[in-house]
Amino acid sequence: QELNDFKARTGHCRVPHKYNENRALGIWVSTQRRQYKLQLENRPSNITIERIEALDDLDFEWEIEKRAFVRDDEGWQRRYQE
Image (cartoon, rainbow, N blue to C red):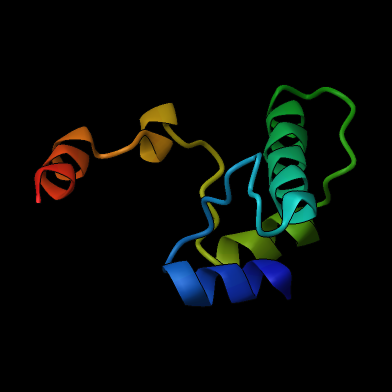
């Protein structure tokens, strides 16, 4: 439910690992990605197909680019100058 709420507010499921508003959610999302990666590598993993499908239904992004969390420097500079 917490991930659903986050997505409703932000429009995506890219919860930062160090999400100050809900650190447990950030850690949980990071763990899901790690477990999914292990599953893809045929290594021991706790994630099930049902969990993967449930997250897929939310348009969960299994791999994200680090720059997705990088500040928009141009936008920041513009706002700073105002």
